[in-house]
Structure formats: C-alpha cells, structure tokens
Length: 273
Image (cartoon, rainbow, N blue to C red; front, side, top):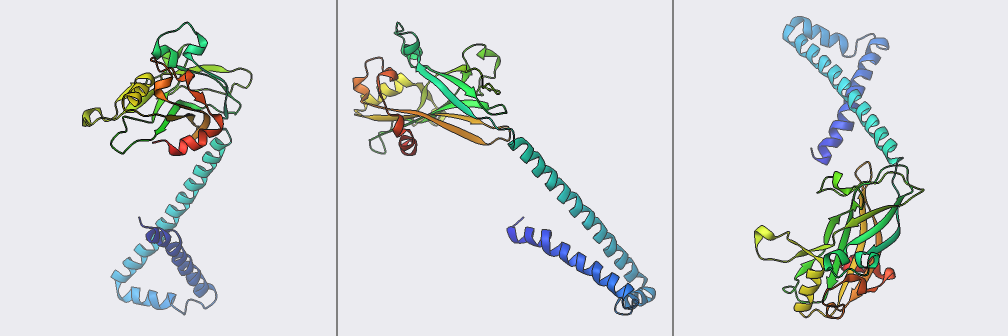
C-alpha cells in the first residue's frame, strides 16, 4: 500500500465514519431526525432495496470500526513487546585478544598461528547472539587487481564450541563476573571470475600471500566484533586495526607481525571493501 493510500485508510476513512456517526446522533437527539434520518427512512420504505443498502453500509461501518480497534490494539501490543525486549540489551566488551601464535609461540602453522582468540564479557542484561568477526581489508591497486576482499566469519567458544550450529556465530548471556574465550578462523573472500565460486573464502595467510604476489606494498585491516540483540538489531564493537607490507611479515604471513593501529580502526573500516 502506498503512503497516500495508507494515510487515507488510517486517518481519512475513520474520520469520515466518525463524522457520519456524530451527524446521525446529532440529527436524532437535537433535530428530532428531521435533517436526513427521516428522509432516508422514507426513501427506504418506498424502496426496499435502499433499506438493504443502508443496513449493509451500517454493518460495514461496524466491521470497519472493529477492524480498526483490533489493528490499534495489535500495534500497541507490538510496541510494548518491542520496548520490553529493548529493555534487555547485551553490552559486549573484549578484555583480551590475541592470535594463536601469541598463545603458543612454538606454533609454526599459519592456520593455527593466525586464529584470533577473544575473551568477551557481556555487561548487559540479555543474551548476545550470532557473534561474528568482520575482517575489513583495504589496499591500493587498480579496479582489476583486487585479489581479496573483506569477509565475516563466525565466532565459537573455545571450549564446547561443537554444540553450536556451524553456520551461526556463538551466543553469550550476561557474564559480568567472568570472560568467555571465543575463537574464529580468519578468512577473506577471494576474487574469482568463476560465478560458482563467487563467495570463495581463503585463509588469511593465503590472502596476504596473494597480495604479495600482486605486488601490493601495503594492506590495512580492520577487525570488528559483530553480534545481534534479542530484537534482531545489529551491533558492532571496533576492536583494532593492522597495517603492513605483506612481503615483510614473513613467509608464513602471520598477522601478529603486522603493526597494530588501534586509533585507525574506524578509518580502516570506512576504507574497507
């Protein structure tokens, strides 16, 4: 329904119905039905079909008023439910973040070394759902030399993470007293001309290797925590940002070797694609 049609249906039609009813009662109680009630009834006596039309119109008015009343009640109930849910809001904070290599500096595996571990607390009064990490990457290059793009990956609990659906980020209820460790597999999207692989994901170290192969001298990466509230609103917490020359962070392309720029995270978010 168009905006004008909705305006007519919600305001104009009820106003006409109200005016009609008010005019009818005014005629009956003030003018002794002489203005239009008696003339209408006279016409109805001589034309029985007209009486049927009048009764049908009155019945339609009653149905319409009933419908409008139910509609208003549903609207009020819906707003009350939304306000009630909005009063229960998760507020997430990250007390610690580190890469797999930082947790175990003996690791030589690029996949394990680049895994991101976050200790997260929920200082709100409701559960945060579908926890994810967005890796927003940007770098200089022509339109046709963009081998990798930004991507979002799910967060799962480090312990007992297997019980949660694999295609959905984890959840965290109110936990003001203690932090819960979550982990994600950092991946970026790979540009391809194959339509069947348009959403192909590759590991972070492979993505940085592609940048080096394409002679990209510097990349900028924003790391953002995202989650959903009970009413389905999307919230995000900018965590940090990294900048480096992919050729100078080692053959294993471990991200922890990149220079961290916490103050630049919002700038990198805006420039990411």
